Length: 146
Length: 144
Image (cartoon, rainbow over all chains, first blue to last red; front, side, top):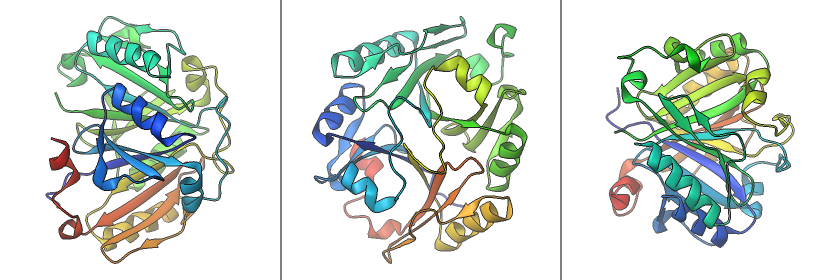
């Protein structure tokens, strides 16, 4: 077994790299300059979770698949946060930084609270909070979740 | 509280996709699985994939689902411990009905990456990087 924790890099194409760097910094990511140039920027969420934002030209060097229309959605990316207030803070920061907050109805199930936001290119993020007792399996998932 | 990400992906056949993700090394978490969605644990406490039926997906968003075989909005990349582990994971994906190498193999010596496609066309890259080749410590340390 490895002593290196598994890492994930979410690669997203963006139309304006500087604008997207500013957006991701505004919602709580930290830029890693050692993996950033004028075609791509590494944005750090945690020691194992990274977002790589790529210019469209850079994206094309990785795949010949065209970028799906922003009216469609291949993926939504949910981030677990420590409190409902942190969820609200991220949604508000997104709206102020050129994103869109609450593209979907706010989900408030008591034990779980989530809001969905768009980055400037239309990529969907879902910051959410879940009662740690439910998340850890110490309490059952309430029936209302279904 | 550990930082966790849940990558939500729409899938056409939940059972088939569950089997596929188990074959490539993820573990199902039954507490967050029913007949509309399945929680697949890639790294306990940090990286999870939520597979959602199209009907379930539609309850979350009015955005349409693009055909991931012909267009992409994301390339998901996970780290592996060695070059052999990279090849092994791609082999497992192929054995389980996925497709190998939808993107070019990247071989830079200190870094080696390949990719596979899940049954719905979502692309996963698997990458190994020589830890001693990363300049000035790991990114995580620089971020702390």
